[in-house]
Image 1 (tube, rainbow, N blue to C red):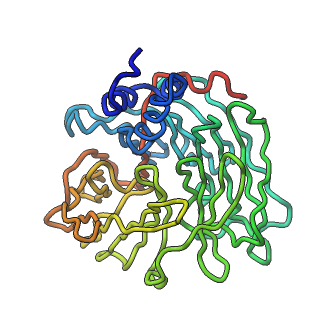
Image 2 (cartoon, rainbow, N blue to C red):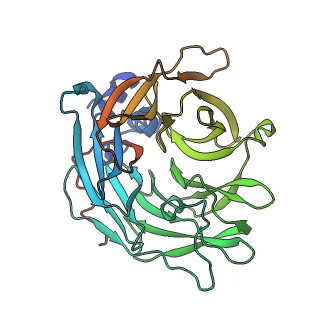
Length: 374
């Protein structure tokens, strides 16, 4: 029956299957359940780059296939929408989009061209002022998936604020088995400062965001039992740096710490290596010595390469930079400067205002939305 496969062979086969098929394989026996849970976790599944471009009065998403070469037609447009639309997350081949103009949210599977699931705008409590100038509306949303409950969840952390600048609940809308069909509130511990710049990141069944009271704090929301709890902050030596941004790498929460300003910028990325013991480790150090390039977000690295957007005479390009193999400090390093701009993997010729965001994307032939409430 295949249960005699070695774990390595079985894991190699399982990562090629779509998510729902892997979940069904968990039921075969303990050996298969271990292989699915421990060896085919999200961090082991190879993804592609999804580049979301906002230009020419439209927003478009392209799958970047590096294997086909820069001039080999490697860009495939998989989604397009109005300029006010922003991708807030991807999971298992699904793309979640928020329209800043209307507040409407849609979840779709572009690969299967399924009918999109529409989520109504999150209700706004009375008496609140508009978003903080430092936080754009779509940065207060996240799109997560819990591998045990099989539920997809849209999380909204208030960026609106009252006179005290605090809130006492986050809003969630759940799709999938026993999901319900309305927004509901999840209480937060005490009075939390409003969502700060850096976005909401959903990783391995939890959502994370930064709030500010007396100082920055990371809060987490468990997408299974709906508990909100604080996360241990970074080492104290980093308290005086310029800015923080939450991101994800290989199914781990990361905090990107940006020091300095163009043309000389350093981005240190710290990963939460142990969720239970809340241990942080610095894993990436990206040094940029040119004003013409900047790190892309929220996906800042793919495989063994850092990603940057480069401004050029003919337009813009997405470039990759090989990370150094020096591991003396357990930290991968990359340097970006004018004479070494990196290898081009995507080119977009435009002279007007341009914006690009990057996401990890895994195409799937499954019809993931067919049983969800619309």
